Length: 237
Ligand code: PXP
Image 1 (tube, rainbow, N blue to C red):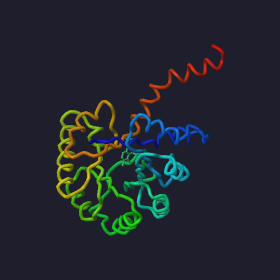
Image 2: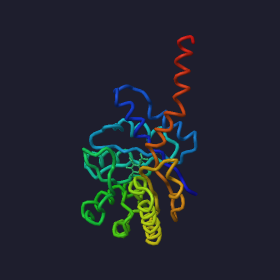
Image 3: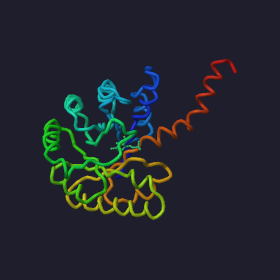
Image 4: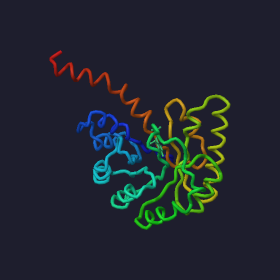
């Protein structure tokens, strides 16, 4: 059965814009759970621009569903992961100046750096996923590292149109098929929305889609009218 992991980073972005106590990440995650989400995904970035360490601990305590912690291979973040022990850690590349995760992890080029962290997380009982571009060389490298999951980066697919998008979809299909052949569970995500997710649902052997930004954006419009009405009511109107 295909599953949805909802990435709630941008609920934290709203909170951090004012350094307020609201909106609550725990409440946001609970709303996703009530809606039927199968998991919650958060990215603890090195610069802590949205998710904070306290969020990771709070969600670990309160979530009924699967917690997927996205993170770079940095020692202080790895230490948090080893302490919190989420069900899943997705290792991603990270550059401070980027707006969002721009490309997949170069697993083939970083086998030596990744092997110890993958082993430490596995020994702590955490399932490790590697966020990779839909590139067969990276799929083989992930299999060589012995991780259970890969997450295929759908960003290039999402950004392109027409034939270029079709080519990206074909790369995703080939990568998903090969990942399954070599024993990896296949997740995918990044840049997916109601408008572009359709063809991605046809990827072979797909286990989980991790989707965040477009869902939080859509939530603004699903909820804005109610929020204004609530304030007007408070004002006696
Ligand atoms: N998967 C990974 C590994 C990511 O880094 C992100 C963004 O944090 C997502 C999925 C979700 O992407 P989006 O917010 O564009 O839906």
